[in-house]
Length: 351
Image (cartoon, rainbow, N blue to C red):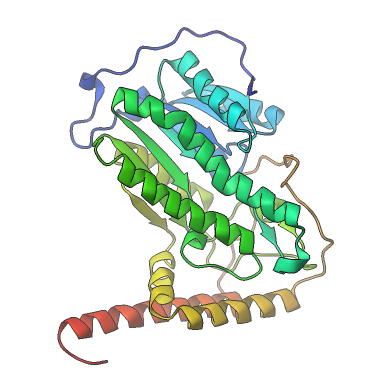
């Protein structure tokens, strides 16, 4: 069951009337919104919580590390928002259902729910313990399904609401040595598309997918690693505050899909045009990067126990160079080439 960090029993606020709705997009102003945010203890989650609080939002923050969450809730209130912190493991469906009930009890409604939890396990498939694979899928896929299942009935009853699924470029392009992560993200994309279609008769209920490229968060350092080498994301690495701004924008003007990071669309197009070439390029770049990396002990990271960190940044932003940048450049070039092919074929020219 979620545990609240704020015992004050604030009286529930009445749901917003249609007069509170921005007529241009059907979403309430952020200062009128009650928002649930999972994975709020660090990285994108922490950056998003602070960004929303500065705009006066009412926040229900969820993560496994309650002391860290309490600190963030206090910072959010100091920034101008209202916040409650609820210790929640999203792999526990009953706990997530209680999270939704607690948000409604405190603020009278939920306007938006951001499924932001994400974990990973890096390593050769057969050398990664099966329990680690299972945990990645439970957190990244079932955790999002649990959140969606808890809040969609509320959105349906109110006739409005925004459900945001934090996926990643990994939901389109599968990286080697991260098989269960890719499975969870591809599955989450399929789940989100299916749910969006199912709710399409509700014009003010939105299912929004977010696809950032590599983001500079502590999650990479906190994740499970069975590769035997230190892992760094390939450049360019996105500032988590940029992803937070994209999430803030979605809650004002919901869109089905949002891509964050310049390489995202070119990489998706490259994979669509030449999937085998992209797969070989990714394998080559990952092998080179791991060969050059320093040795590291195997670790389960934050799969089964919450990490103690609360930073927004992971400390990985640096100029683009090396094999990771080379592979990214190849993907961008292939994406541009695929666009050129489509453009030529539409004009009857055989490339």
